[in-house]
Length: 154
Image 1: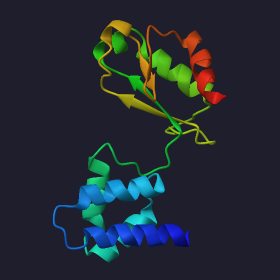
Image 2 (image 1 turned 180 degrees about the vertical axis):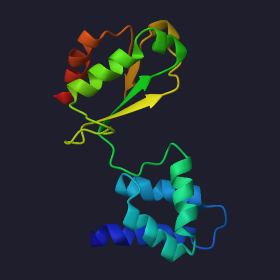
Image 3 (image 1 turned 30 degrees about the vertical axis):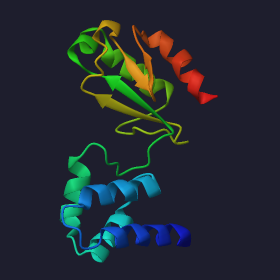
């Protein structure tokens, strides 16, 4: 923790006094800690003289920022029109069921997987499609999901 605080302080020192640098600052903080923790955002606010509301507003507006830990593997489920009409919801349900995610949970307890719904992956001819990391899986059925996830669970 001490080492992490020193690294955080070094980042804050580099950005202190730079107007319009909140986004790159938060990107570096997220890279350091994996996501934007509440206490870290409060500390950034105090140290940088920027209101917590402004920092939180930026962190929640831009989709690149995460306020919760993210899994090692991010599963992007396409919800575009072609995927939607081809059964994206059944694929999403199969993934959530297979990973034992309940309610609004999106990351597995072991932080191996995080599930995200995205507007479009640009692979309409493969609908329904998901991406895990940079791997694309298309023409999916709910029955195929355990096999796809199994490749990453090893």
